[in-house]
Length: 484
Image (cartoon, rainbow, N blue to C red; front, side):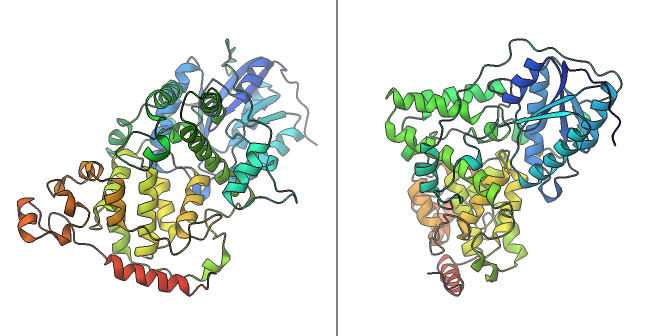
């Protein structure tokens, strides 16, 4: 029997996770309404296992926490430990009886948080969790028979859009009272050891503005300058018709509710083209669908949703994998996408599909390899979106692309980067090639290559696979699965 301790009813812990903001923060609002707060951030590399934060994520997190700490008047406490141990020690030593947090829906977090709730409740400590990161709770959108959707369109159009409307965003607390820890000593942000030692951290972060204010500004800029034309423009990597809100959303620097209502209000007022706003809101729906799938299928990051793919015969060519990661496949649009990823911690969504298709269907390398690389290199690395996206590309997931849909890197380049601006930006060594040969430099006559200062196999690699032969091999291998 746990010994009961006298607890201070007016002080609570606000446990920060993927909600690095003050505006529209349900857990923070509830904690502030309760009284003084102890805001804490705990880096949990203990329970996360193979889903420990990747390098790019840690870079973003470091800078976002720095900004958030300033918003909290430098009262934020940092810990690098097991959350159960940290929270229990603070509650017991400081006589605190309430803990508030916003939910995270990754399977390992759900399992950990359930355990924390059970143990804290046994000690007489009240736990309060809120939805601060999804428009709809997964259990709020089900088919008529009570089972989860597995196809996006009915999930979104029939399920989400007929469910209760996402809650209206709430204002940031006007005044926050802080309680200074008396007996527990916390560390500063440097104790989290988030930043890698190599210079990659500097190259990535200079491409971004991080934090809640930056997220709000990005949304306003997108609405003002880039939402118009979004439906078509989002497919072209050199156009600015993309929101680039994904890392801000993942880290909770802005809530999906804030974005949803800003865009849907434009739609209702007919301020923007309906097709553009409707398409953007459906992309928000895809984010929801990915988290929905992960909630109901917690093995999504590692197991094929379509079990017939368990027998697929993947290749294991380490040289191919290295060339793909390095942007040295010999296919310019592929290499441009991979180099954008390495130099910015981000990749345009059209390119994510193209490079993913190439890895899985031309190189026949397991989608796990792509998922792991993206997890380490993306500042918006999200377990749900990353896993669902790669399963979609491979054809083994819910609502997946058909196995026979294999993106041709030459035609994709010609179609979506017709002037070659995007490709030339990331592959300067072929920038002098005329557009006619930019995406297939091996077809260029020798005099054209010479005039462009290109020596295939030296200044730029020859293709590591033949696109036609590799496509035929992929189709043959996929056909063996007897997919109807």
